[in-house]
Image (cartoon, rainbow, N blue to C red; front, side, top):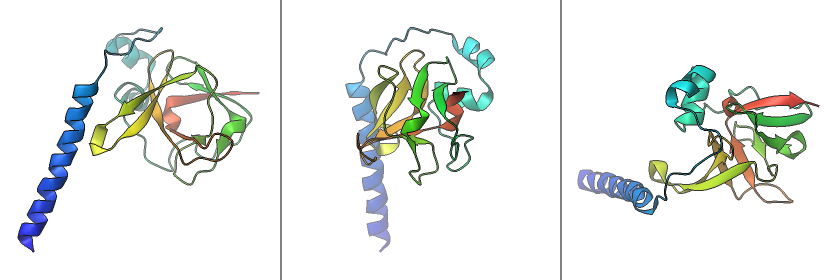
Amino acid sequence: MKPIFVALIAFLMYFSACGQNKQNANSKKKMEFPIKKTDDEWKKSLNEEQYRVLRLKGTERAFTGKFYKHKDKGIYVCAGCGNELFKSETKFESGTGWPSYYDVIPNAVVLETDYSYGMVRTEVMCAKCGGHLGHVFDDGPKPTGLRYCINSVSLDFKKK
């Protein structure tokens, strides 16, 4: 039994490493965004958690974000730059613990394949500042079939 367990662990580590290598091999030139700040400038303009998520591609704990059960009408904007991202009408309860939307405001985000943690996902970033917002999945409701799973800490809100 022990040799099988060791072999399974080695197998998983190999494929996790392959995913990381694939990311490096397929990485394009670093994306350019209209809003450019140094790390020090971002650290001064964001709180610690916002910096960790928006700039270092972190994730907030599920079911803890301020917008998880938020129901007000308005526009969700990037906490890093104020770019309008999601209309409240597109927000839905996905049961995942993060705010979820089935559509974005046109040209508000850019998508990039994310190979981190041995998985293949689609990362969602703000089109103006490049801030990490979350990921998009193809298991959402109609009309798009998409679920933009977004970190609350990456967002601010403009009430209508």
